[in-house]
Length: 281
Image 1 (cartoon, rainbow, N blue to C red):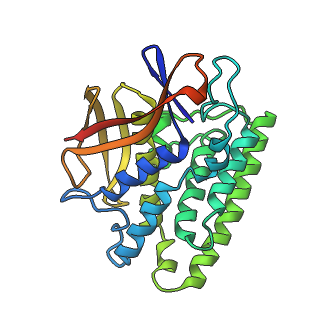
Image 2: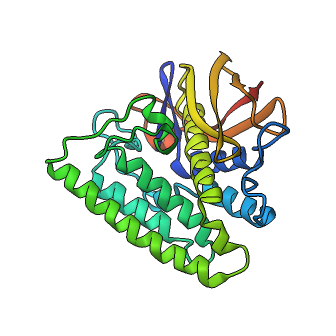
């Protein structure tokens, strides 16, 4: 759950709805300057990879489905806990569930979700100097935790589990044949995960109501070896400027379902609405 301040009200956006917005952006990624999702390797099956990449990005928070249906409430305000609250153990369970849910029908999409979880959590226990592997939410500097704490040990155990699951997914792709063994190569996998991180960040900025400028580093343009910096800046509450502009429609209208309520109001009384804006060059 994302909790968006809005004057005397809060806007609530579920993790799956936030992820669906990321997938919408992925479907519109690509123009004369930027390769569409899945089109980074000239020898790949672009149509199949684009479908799977968009699906994986749209479903990257599917592990939160069950929790969002019956969320735990925050005693401080009576609202559902936001996605940064709660225990690491509960979060790890959601990541593991999300990476496994579609592993038989969509192993490449599951691989993206699994790798996304790995990169996101590894920055908490290791100094990741290469910005192309660090989630844009971490900005210019990594934030590793003290390596000798129980928290860090639990994170390392989770990372080992993600590596084990990745081997399962790679084996599934290899057995599928066709374009999928090649899809696990760095030429395709690395830019796909980086695109997931990128659009996760853009969607979080939209859904969470952030109004600060954002700098996104090392974003693939035509391929993994061709990466650029993208700047995001709000010109008005309903207009987000993106430069260079990576989408196929300019301006690109976007919206996401939200529920707005007064502080301390019963969640059952909240008002359905939409957060709507346009992305512009």
